[in-house]
Amino acid sequence: FWDHRPLWNQARLYVFGHALLEKSFAPLPGITGKCLHITTPTLPGPADPIPAWLDQRIAQTWRDGTITTPAALFPLPLLGVPGFDPANDTASYYDNTSVFRPPRGG
Image (cartoon, rainbow, N blue to C red; front, side):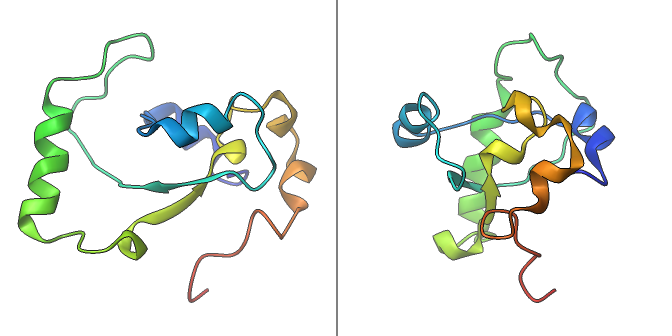
């Protein structure tokens, strides 16, 4: 999250599911969602509505068999996403290894 922080300007995060939305009102440090990474040639602006192609791309991912189990989705600690928590604007925020763990197999 810290070393590649500027790359978040080239990403959009769409949160699905009521549990994550509810937990974000009183987040605990370890609040983690499952992430499906989808690339696109054009990036919606931060204030743009959810793009129409998103539903189709998600459905296609399931139809293609790219994702077959929840374990195949990448765990994303939401409080680490730049801007989600104002406290994450310093590198030391990410020193909590119980929340920000090295990638699997790494």
